[in-house]
Length: 492
Image (cartoon, rainbow, N blue to C red; front, top):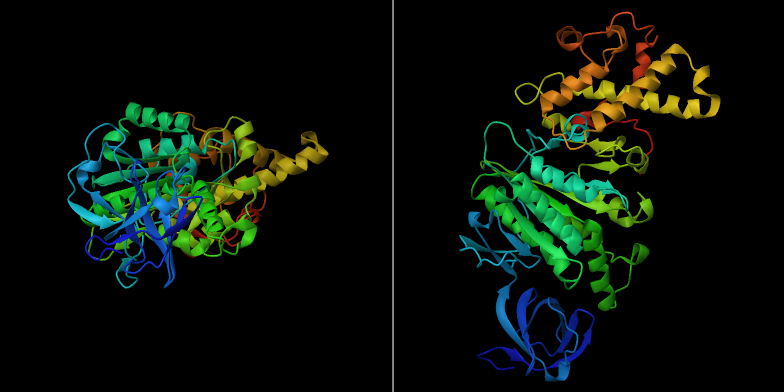
């Protein structure tokens, strides 16, 4: 090694996106390197494993045709960083933070490590106040709270990409506070990337958004950098400029597949279904970067999207994600086949921090009780629907027919909204209209004060459910943070 330039000429082999270097004296873990071969473009890399006898360099560019014996590894002495500034708004970058829109790189206000720093638990503040996504199934029944991490569990073929684009275009915060969106697409096709940019430009969301696009034909290792670059930009906007920042990551499954590919190239012992045993820790290093800091006005909220392989909710990716995050939004094939958009199944969905983001001075004080009552009636209506499939709708009683009609209206009128965007108030008003066929005695989840103020029962509409306590059958009690203790089994 040259002591002045810190160059190594001891590369011995290449395995996929990895370069193996012997006798790595002077190298440091996480250090960025440059790989030079005579007559070939310079490649970028990062030291991801370091021992006394060998180092492993993760290549950030295509390594096809690389001859290790002729390679010169230049140690730069720095870790992977990203220049961040407010000028990144309205710009499009690749997964490593390089501009894709043809314009020069924005002048950075700071250069920060993309891996970030852990948030001090002592300084971490409780998430509070809502983010309005414009989608009733989220805003009304699974409210997204500033500082929360709330994933969307999708299945192959469902419109998760369209939902993510709708949220980027329609998300808002109350009170006139500065708000921004950071969007990262990981392993997306060219068609999806073009659709994202077209949608953002049409809605005007691109002006306030920072977009990172990692395409499917980019090096797999870049998929591991894209979410970290997005979070580094979000943290700067949130904690330096005091903005409320929503980070939308799609698709976490592509990220995990890249993680598995790198682990296999390193010949690591695989864990569940071939994924590395440290995947939980790696995902936590991303998701735990959401939150709020005491004494600072900004926040980072995460809405990651993942596709469940084989529609399996117990697959390691959704399973580990569910342990780290504060709930989940589950998309349904059945609702998608009915033409419902967004096809959010509210029964297995859950936002554990919902109570921290709703109430007096935020949306309306009746939000919690209304959401619980809608959930309870919809759960019972789904049970009646299954019963009707066996015994026939003609054999149902008046109460069962009313609940069945409610379940159909709930999906058709509240969950489904097509291209429309709804405010919190519009969602709550629609919920009250759905409860109009029920008399106050049946609405056991809602306080008498709120019933007197908001409920307008229909007159002459037949019998209502006889036992108000039955409204609890499908929902369980709402516990701390809005958790439902007796929710039905999860189904994709």
